[in-house]
Structures are given as structure tokens and as C-alpha cells.
Length: 310
Image (cartoon, rainbow, N blue to C red):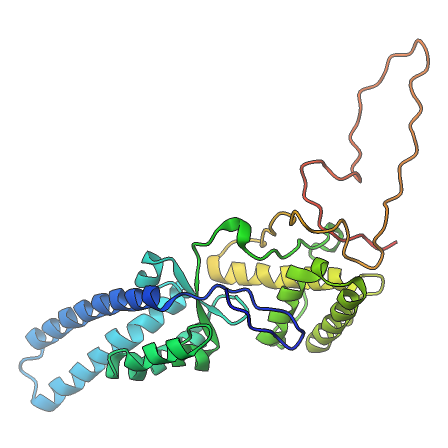
């Protein structure tokens, strides 16, 4: 597990892929790309035999760039970090904050990969991966990406608490384009571990992160909303947008509550007021069927860990 500590004293929990699995995935991708390049070259030689040598050389260079360079870039962009080799070995390329990559990330990785993989037969990439604490090659360093393992035990994955239901859709119109990846990473890792921190430290860190997030989005934190609840709601909105962009799905489904999480994370935590006892039926009357109250939490619904404002 990677243990990169951010400026907010939160540890990074991404699981980087090991060098052997990455090397095998790259070898499989290169084998497929070389076969495709040979087929394209054979077709070009058969169809352009009447051209002069300069034209044939130009077509060969174009085929090399399109198949061996542009092909992997297009595949990683369209599949959001999962090429054929990475799919076979359970790997994925993600951003430093765990989000899906975009075209600019794949472009930088592919352009640098021409030098460190194709021209040096992978020697530079292997050396960079061995030197890096998270196994990143130069393309990952310049692109701000990381190759992680997807096939990990479910119970050991980091938990991001669900946002309060009373904040669902509250920040749908918020502009999140100016928020840097480093701030998203700090928010995500704080939400993962906020119940492990001292209450005063946790509240202060949540307030600082909420202020930074509000400054980047241009919208202040609404009055009466705890800072931790605000962070969870905005993070859920960001994950929903990433899910729609990456997979074409609807809203992001938050995971179930962590078994070790406390009952509340907000500053208004405390015992919930008890409902007054209901009088029993009068003697001789027919008892009415029990009607479930809408405001009472259902037994099989996971607690979000936040208390709505008064």
C-alpha cells in the first residue's frame, strides 16, 4: 500500500501495481500493437507499391505513429485507463487522486512512453519504476497518474462515508473545474479517516478543507451545515460526475457505512431525541395497523454519520 502523506497530514491509500504485473501488461499491449502494425504495413505495401520511396517512407512513419503511439493513447482514453493488457491483469491507470484519466493524461503517458518504452526497450521505464516509491514510470510522473490494482479485497478498501440524505443534490450546480486534484485527494483521505482523529483535530481539518474547497468553487459553505457533511456532499457530487463521464451511469452509489465509524461526524453530534411514547389503544377498541413513520431511519439502511442541522 502506498503511504504518501499530503499537506493535510492524510495518508494516500492507493494500491500501486507491482513491476512484474505492469511489465506483463505492457508486453501484451505491445504484442497486440506490433501485430496490428505489421498488418497495416503489409496492407500499405500491397496498395502503395506504385509510389516512390519517399512516399512509402512517409506512410510507414505515419503508420508507426498512428498504430504504436496513437493506438494506445486512444485505447486508454476511451477505456478510461484500461488497455487490453491492464484488463487481463486487473490493472487500471488513474489520476493521483483516484479519479478516471482523460485524454491529456493518456497523451502525456503515450508521448513519454515512446522514449522510455519503445526506444529504450523498456529499460528506462523499469529503472524509473524501481526508483519510484509508488512504482511510477516517467510518463506517470509527468501526467500525474498512477497504475493501481483493481482486484483487491473489498473489505480492505478505503471507505468514503455517504453524504447526508438531506444534502442530496444540494450542490449539483456547483462549479468544480477549478478544484485541483491535490485538494480532492486531501478531502477524500480525510473522509476515509476522520473517525480515527481527535475530535478537535478532525473538526479543524474539516473546516480548513471546507474553506479551501469553498474558495476554489466560489460558493461559501452554507450556514448550519457541518464542514464534514459539506465535504462528503461535494465529494459525492464530484464522484457522480466522474461516474457519468466514465461509465455513462447515473448518480454515484456511495458504499455502506464503515463498521468502525461512529454514529455522527458533525459538530452537532449527540444523542438523538427520543420520540414520545405513544398511548396504547383504549379498552375495547380495535387496534389500528402500525404505520411506518417517514422520518424514522429504516433498519436496513446504512447510517450516513451526519446529523441534519436544527
